[in-house]
Length: 90
Image 1 (cartoon, rainbow, N blue to C red):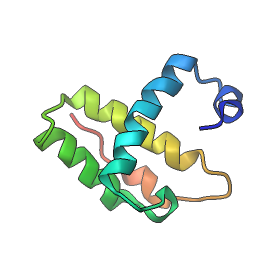
Image 2: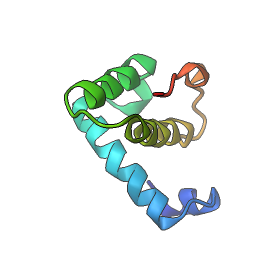
Image 3: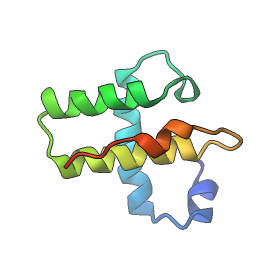
């Protein structure tokens, strides 16, 4: 992520690092796929992987989801209407 983009959105350095820590595994989970070509199904599959195979807590899944939403919303000129329907873990 370009630091200028994140600083313009007033994200702290700690938030940037946390988001990057989730974006990298997401991209590795879906190898050879550009984020612009992924949608709700890929986010859901990754979150299911976190819950079932990595056994992470709901709050951890939600942090990962926030990072992925940031990834998709941060792309200029791109619209992802499915973002409004992403369900967060309880």
